[in-house]
Image 1 (cartoon, rainbow, N blue to C red):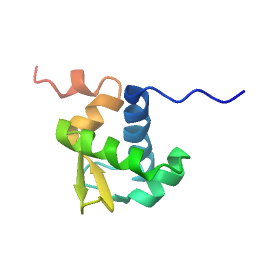
Image 2 (cartoon, one colour):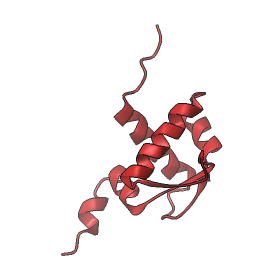
Image 3 (spheres, rainbow, N blue to C red):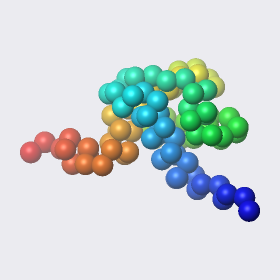
Image 4 (tube, one colour):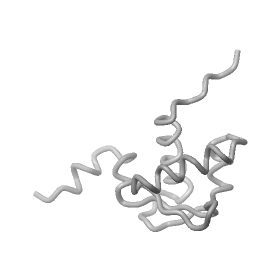
Amino acid sequence: MATPSPSPAQFLSSLLSAVHELTGRRPPPTWTHVDKLQTKLGTANRDAVDAAIRIAVAKGWLRADGDPPSSITLTVDGIKLITPGTAAAAKPK
């Protein structure tokens, strides 16, 4: 039986987490190559990866270099989405 495809939201979350892993969890801007990201995600569908990157860039979660993108980095907002407690910790007291 085939494994069901992740929902678009799950795929975006996986993409952001994979970028965070590939950049060694270093703060932005730490860049990685899209080819490495695609390998980490385990997908042969580069169109899906590129589409997810475009969405994440439009939302302000990633920055990309090139069209189609060749390198990407998380933004501070992107890190807040995937790191529990970061949003609360970032708020001024």
